[in-house]
Length: 226
Image (cartoon, rainbow, N blue to C red):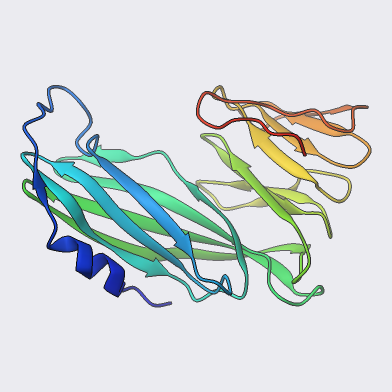
């Protein structure tokens, strides 16, 4: 694993602007946003953190997640604040290059120590979990999550559910997966060629439905035809 600030980020750091927006009762990092960029060969993902901290604005830093064989999906976890520190998980799915190697879920912890006008950003690799299902260079992977679980799979194998606290892994589909989507309440749809499984927010009960393309939608991302 390598963690560093890409040159593109360093070039932006000098271009800060001032802001007079009042924070009020907003979350400690409510003025910040994250930008992610995959390397051309999907061997790494660069992260850039920009926005406003107090009366200062600009890009405060970032890092590089990796190396991976073929990173194919990334999710942010729910942020948690304690004092002046905000932590959140970052989940990166690596589909691998070999069609026989198990795909891997990398779990990072991003830490923002916010002391206006600064944000000290760090990334730490917490877990590297082989999921027991396969992908490969030509596979299509899918990943979605709710508060308790991450659901990941490929169209070359099947899907699994990963417990966010205990990191236990359980089967979540009977065959290849064409999509995994979630709604704002935490219901997850795991779409296979012949059926869709709907998982409740607490992870209990997978309800198989004889629909080829049944998806969940949320308030942030548009649902597009597959």
